[in-house]
Image 1 (cartoon, rainbow, N blue to C red):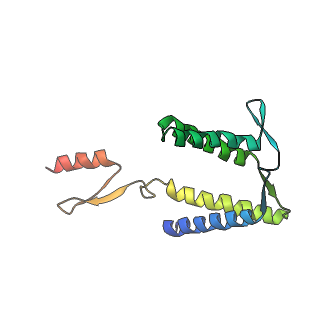
Image 2: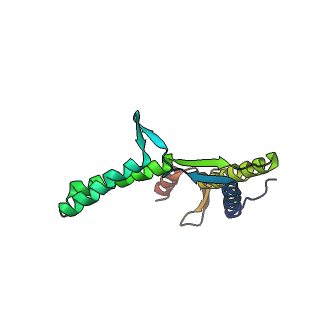
Image 3: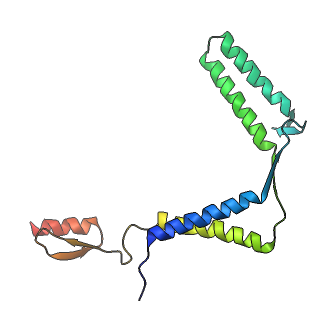
Length: 159
């Protein structure tokens, strides 16, 4: 005999596993950035120094104040901010600190096991295990239907 599943408990357990696994992983990763370190980036085959990506932002700010906030100057300034964010992301280095095999397996099991439990509940078919709904008609007669079309057909027959 199959035991009844408590979907809320599975969802919360999977969410807790996922959160703990991500927390442990975040404690084992070292993040460094070399944005102002003079490292050059490669944009479309051109080497661009990190300080140069700020120049379009400065031009956009001056243009925005000089033209009393024209739409084109706002778009240019927005794109220059996006360029700065991309430059920061490109110069960010992630490094995993030394971990044991047990810690690494534990992190992976917690993250992917928790994600699997959460996904199973969120992506589950809303029907019950047997795939059938129990329903009572207005006359109190109990019947089973597989889907809405059969239920509508049964309602038409009762009229």
